[in-house]
Amino acid sequence: MWLRIRRNWQLYVLLFLPVLWLIVFRYAPMYGAQIAFRQYSPAFGIEGSPWVGFANFIRFFNSPKFEPVIINTVVLSFYSLLVFPIPIILALSLNQVRSRMFRNSVQMITYAPHFISTVVIVGMLFQFLHPRVGFTASLANLLGQAPPNWMGDPGAFRHIFVWSGVWQEMGFGAIIYLAVLSTVDPALHEAAVVDGANRLQRIRYIDIPGLLPTAMVLLVLTTGRVLEVAFEKVYLMQSPLNLGVSEVINTYVYKVGLLSPILDFSYSTAIGLLKGIVGLLLLITVNHAARRTTGNSVW
View 1: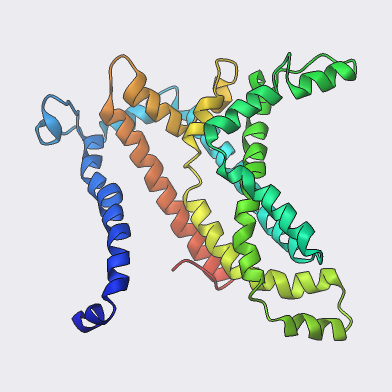
View 2: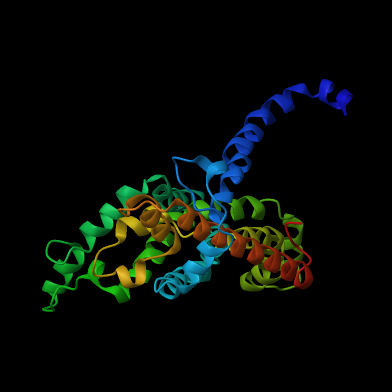
């Protein structure tokens, strides 16, 4: 091992900073997770706070917020998971375009929104969907209809959240699949054309099987983060009108742990820890199912 390190020390130097980041920001904070099982007080510190076992978890299970928060998180997470194939469809479509200029233009236009900050994206949504001066209000007035208040409509919150995310991320997500498609052997397509296969048949029998291993790995990783609903975007889009469907685990933990009059770090940590455990179980389950059904998995 030491001989390999001496021969390739440059690679290990490059690896040092990512490993250090992983230790500092991912493994070291696990020590503080024990406050979920304590009645934590900053005055006494972690070690000085008394153990309460699973009292904080039981409190969350018995809380009136438990059911709506869990339902909102699960519904929003799996709704976001349903649009997972859209970057794949975009990549398959761009891969069939013969005009290089058109393909590059579409790719640039679709992945550019990825670099817009979440705060700006939500600000744009409020401007476009404003009930008086927004684009949808102007269109409604043009058609002689009453302008809708989309951002205040609880029924529209999930659709706006998910599909604005599709617009922002589908181009950037398609880059990975386009890179995979570029590695597909062109001889396979040439042989398929000789055999009389049309374009859709080549996509089905050549391109999609080539994408499947990468898509399954990304699907497993995405499922593991299914409860990690984007906190910033949800919190910025929240209002008293849509709070019934927009309050998710991340925003609830933030409000309980940092915004409530009595800061309850133990309770909020217990909720966050519970979310992490459920995400881990989902990751293991989906990885096992992917390995059994397709033979492709993360491990």
